[in-house]
Length: 247
Image (cartoon, rainbow, N blue to C red; front, side, top):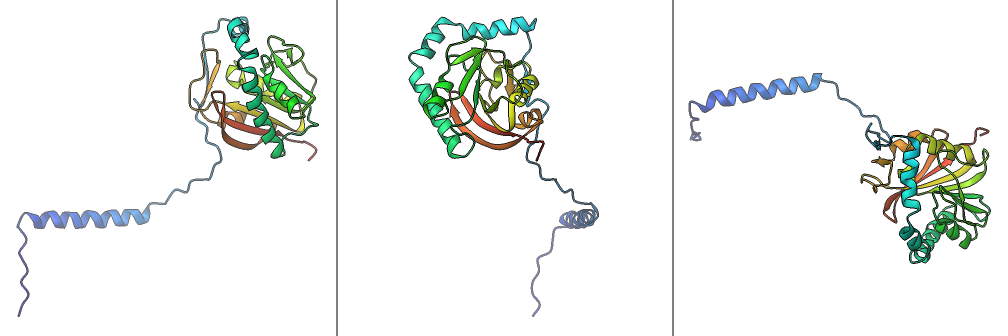
């Protein structure tokens, strides 16, 4: 007995034939087209991943804008009273963790860049890193001395450890990083707390959208670690170690 096969509609036959031919052509082309292999990369940087803000008529105008925040009497009162203990406690926790990871020791000669009233310095001293100093446009003795992070007032290879959470305030990021690498000893550690993928506050001079630009700027250092943190509005910790040319 013959099996019953339903007849296809007349209009459907050309459609199926055309579909079969198209699939056959695509199969042949796919065999002839070479596949692209993507090279593994650790950091991808887009040209806009570091954006410098415009609008400054001169370097003095930029400095004055930074001083408007640093010298604000209401902010300074908050920094030295209500916020003091809390920030020292949080910074001490950050620095103690760095000690546990072997990136900081009690014998490290340390600099805190953009320290304002010196909570970071107080935290370092609290956990035993006694040879520590802060630097800011406005001094706050005895914890903070006067200095511009675009041109640090220190000799070459002075410090074993440098910390900053004000990278976003640098109008010239290359100078900012260059001064860190100049004053850091070979093998020394730099730790930056930065804000990624969000626009920083109105006093910031740049906006950072990945760690890629930092890796490029630290030409004499290697990136050691990147991790997420909660650091007073900053979300990323990036650690660099200055290369030792003797090794």
